[in-house]
Each structure stands twice: as C-alpha cells, then as structure tokens.
Length: 420
Ligand code: PMP
Image (cartoon, rainbow, N blue to C red):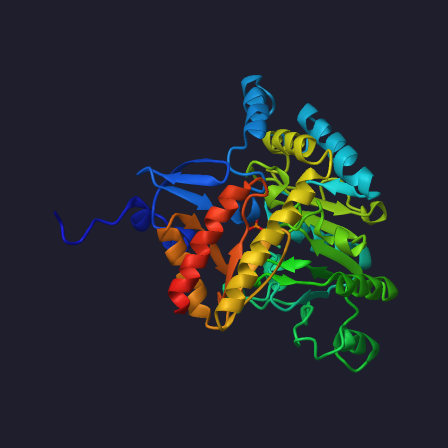
C-alpha cells in the first residue's frame, strides 16, 4: 500500500475554492428525508439541509412524485421567461397559499436562480425607483457573492475577494450590536439628520431578520418594526432578504411576519423550490415594478421543474399552520437542549428562532471542534459567525422528534468532549 495516497479527482481537478467538502471529507451518494449517505454506506443526520435549501428534507416523496410525473410527461424544462403551464400553476398557488392569506400585494419577478441573483435584482430596482445610489446594510450581514450583493455583505475575507472597491453601501449596527447599551437607530437616525454626516440619502435598507451566516443574530420584532417605521418616515425602501430565513425556517412562511411589517421588496431563494432546485423570487410592491421589458434578464429564470416542486411544496405544507407550529415546537426543543449546555459549560450561550438555532462559543475554536466531532458521530452541522464561533443548526423542518433528539444528543456529547 502507498504511504501517500493519490489525490482524488476533487483535489486534483476541482478548484481550491471548494469548502464544505473539506469539513466533511467523504463522498456522498444518496439522501432521503433528514439523512444523507456516503458511498461507503455511512449515514449522517443532516442538520445543515443544503444551507437552508432543503426545508422539506432530501428528495421529499411528495415533491419527487410531482417532479417525476412532470419530467415523464415531457413538461417544459427550460423556459426563460416564457409563459408555461408550470409557471402559471406556480404563480396561482403562490398567490392563493402565500400572498393572499397574508394580505400581501406583491408582484413577482424571477431574477435568475440564486440568492445572489435576487439580491442583485432588489438592489438594482431600489436604485432605479429612487434614483439614489447608496444602500444601508448591517454589521455581519450576508447577501451573496456577486459584486452588488458582496458590497452589502460584512465578512472581510469574502469582501476582499472582490478585488475592486465595494462602494455605495454603508453598514449600520444590527440589533444588539452594542449589547443593549445603545439606543436602537440612534446612530442611523442621527446620520440621516446631520447634513454634515457624509451619509447620502439611501435608496434602501437591506436586512436579514435573523442573520444566518453572520452568526444566528436574531433581530427583535420591535427592532424590525422600528426599522420599518424609520424607513417609511425617511422615504427609504426596506428590503428584507429572506433567502435563508424565508420559506418557514423561523416558523411563519416569511420571517418578517412576526413583526407585522410589510417590506417594500423581499428576496426568496434556497427553499422556495422545496427540492433543492435552483430558483429565486424578487417580490416588490406593485408601484415599484417600473422595470422595462427585458431590462433585467437571464437565461435561467424559468426553471420549470422548480416551479413544479415549489407548487407541490406550497400545496402540501402551506395549506394550514401545521408546519409553522411544528417548527416552533421543534425550535423550542433545540433551545431547551442548548440552554442546558449553556448552563452546564462556561463560555457557551445560545440564540435562535424557529428552526435556526445557534450554540455560541466564547472560544471560537470549540465550535469547529463540535462540528468535527459531530461529523465523526454521524451528524452534519456547520459553523457561522465572523470568527466561526457559532454551531448553526438548520435541520429540515420535516425532521421527526426522534431524529432531532438523536442529533441533539450527538451535539451534547461533542460539546461535553470539547469543553471538559
Ligand atoms: N442572502 C442570504 C441571506 C443568504 O443566506 C445567502 C446564501 N447563504 C444569499 C443571499 C446568497 O445566496 P446564493 O448562495 O444562492 O447566491
């Protein structure tokens, strides 16, 4: 046997930019529900769920059946923004199951399939509507890797990758940035008032209600309400980036529902197709829809199999509030487990909402070690936060209580191991 093993095709051919595969050094082959399997038959409980793209689990049977039927019937796969039966049925279902019951009057744009695509469309539209350039973003925000989205993203390593100045964005403190010692929006409002502050009148504010990549930072409902009021008082558009926290991740379909606010623009992607298919939406108040035909386009805006699985997911999971309620109950179960760990070990705390929950380590290295031990014990979970100091849980919303208990035991054991 060779002492030095040959590099795999991933190591020899795939770019050094790859990342998740370094944390989970195995080759995955199949998946079902909350479980993912590698080619050697090892099973892992998935508390990562495609970074929030698999809210209904892997290969959800209801969605799979709809997809298989559609493919077998030679339904349109690629459609740019042509009108198709699949798109019509998706739009009708989205209106009937999601928008109308919430009293939301939005136009729907298909901006290209990724979260970054919808963020770019939102920023571009806000600038076009207001005729202004600058955007307010928040500390530790994450909105994507394309230049516009990156300009409103906080992470310095990611920003450095741009290679050019990232301009026309000004960060403000997210909720609780000063540990509750500073009055909310004092700074922001003061800058808006002060003609000597150097802050140009912004086109829009872009905000995540819970910052996923930024470390599971949860904005309070009253903070979100105050932000929405400030925006409306000052004629600034409010964009809620619900790419990761939408589609039920925090409980309700839209994460901002708990605050009773109606953003001007909303971005959705990740779990909107429900099946891990590339799909994104930009929702805008009708009066903001001043796009000219084709002014913002893209080849992959109409991936019809995504419309099919999305419709199936909306029909199956959003015709009542059962998923919402079970997400809150399961989130509470994780919270209780994490609160126990926080009480048992120094330097450990917890925060989250619904089924995005974080276990926060003062010693950032420990979070990575917990994830590593968890992987060895058969659980996928990742870190987030500026120093990767948070173990971030994003299990499928469809996870069973037994599966959740199993995963929480693995994390508790791993935490005990690294903290003692
Ligand atoms: N916005 C938010 C809030 C996100 O969490 C992400 C991805 N983690 C994005 C935008 C970018 O999405 P994508 O990776 O699909 O471009």
